[in-house]
Image 1: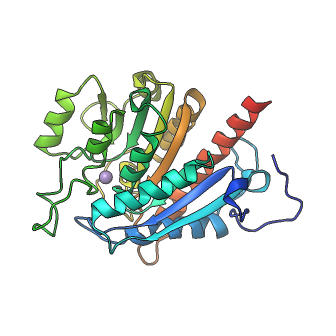
Image 2: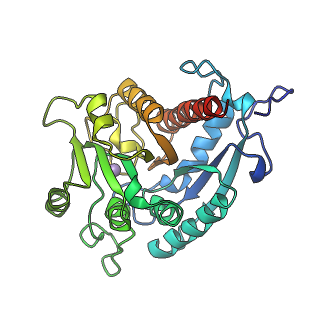
Length: 307
Ligand SMILES: [Mn+2]
């Protein structure tokens, strides 16, 4: 742990990736967004909130990670010029590069398809069968492609925002999906057919699932936490591509994330689909808050284990 002596006013405290405890990787992309664009600037907007707005004293862990740990910002840039498959390949290569430094990577996006690049890179480092992706989202993202929702019908893609978890499942990961409340027949049938490796916690059709039941449904030691902000009730985080009413309550979300970090070894994380809109910073601010809380707890646990 590298205690800084000077007072800092920014979370991004290290210039060298080799010194980082956490790498915050921003990826600008919203090319396959089917409804509302804007996620291309989501990652940068979260970084801005982390710079300027977040209270550095984390009241849950009673620690100040911004002062006690090194955060490095790696901007992959705006990849909107690329077709989804090329964007995924770029994210994959960048992710692998960061992982050569054995760093914990937190992706800030950007439409949800950017996660596929991370899943692909991690599948070469970990055995995917021993990793569960805990996927918080209104949508299961299990479509084979975006053939039915893509504005560019002439060129449907298997690497669109609605196919991310399908690709992850094909890589061999287990999925635990939380907050699901909008899906196609194709996605429903795929999840039903793969019940052994895909567990769905649906919102709105049954009593709200208990956090301990979600924890118990995870059968691996290692997890990747993949958050689409539309999984959370849009009353809290409204600025996103395809908002769906209902969803996870704010403090439920924080408690769930805390439980996940306590019980499992988190090998990566991401917060995606932040699509800022004018005169309302709730979404990027909330995403920054979740990111910082998670990092605080992750770093506290890691530091504690080292002792
Ligand atoms: Mn979604």
